[in-house]
Image (cartoon, rainbow, N blue to C red):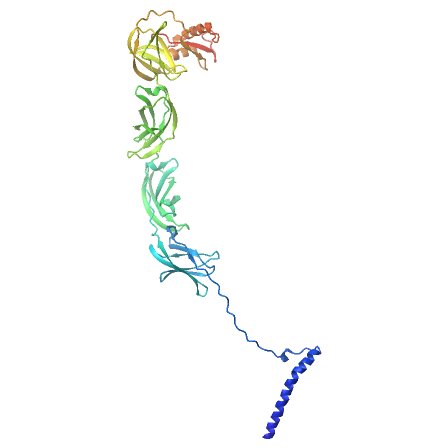
Length: 487
């Protein structure tokens, strides 16, 4: 027993000695440049302490306050910002409305089922594991009312334009309206901030079934107005105005006329002043008498219905009202006879009448004045002045004027044709009998022009005598003596 124990002790001492020799042997081998197997190299484990990662603050998500424009076909669109890649949860109090993943641009959106009215919404930002990163405190928002069904106003004649029929109605501000005639889309319009929309469609006169669809920005249907039966009225002709002439001058005013829609009422405007009204006849014509002074005017026509609504309007037209003829009440007794005088539209041919008897014919000069020598005896007369065309047709008439011829007129001396009259330059197409008809109303008086021109040439070298009445030339200067007295 003791021997066994002693042997064990010796073995133990031997092992201890070997352990002491190993480091010495290791150092000796290293000093000689020999490689020592790593298995013989002692190692020491150094305990380490884990360092927790630094916490990064995550900004709270953002929520944009919704408006009526955020309504879609599936609900109310909610949107905002957040940490890209994170998940957003929108809560209405204790109710989760929906979730969305924040895009790489930091934006998110979702469509939630929220009733109109007040809500307290909060937004939570979660990581991929569902851990809360940050939260937007509750925000008070007012959800706008649901989308109303669009409306369509029934068109009338007043809605007809040169480009088509104007249609309009109401809808959700910012939404897009599509107008359909059966399966044909007539046009589109965006509803304004005031909730109104309008467009011009190409619809033929007659019956149509129109429907209105309201779309969101993505083209999804928000609401629709069921088809409505409408009757498109026939196109209204724009009223027209005939340019007035001397023929339209009457004792009661200037006669104006034109065309329009039968049965409609025409209003005539001179700038901002309404001149008068007239009803368009079954033949499409209208006329009225106006108190327009001579000179330039800018006239426009409006066609209105029985309720005074404008159906159509013409472009403004510039017109010149001719000067009405006048007759001076006091006649002048001259050596050549009784001189009647007055004013009128330059170039107009006037006839002076004493009841049923024509006193004479005269042309109004370029300065707007005229004079006529007559053989009226002394006394009182009621003389009328009529404007006539080249054929002698009546264009207009001045109301009769009281004229007094003073006493003391003796026999008329031999007439001097070169004294009273006017010069005239021959125009293409002129000949003497035509000029006689124009200035005297009698083509047989062409000899008076020949005699007058020759008499004037005797005292004024700028005139050339007429040697052959059949030969006058364009540009020749003639003298037109005043009209003779009598018929």
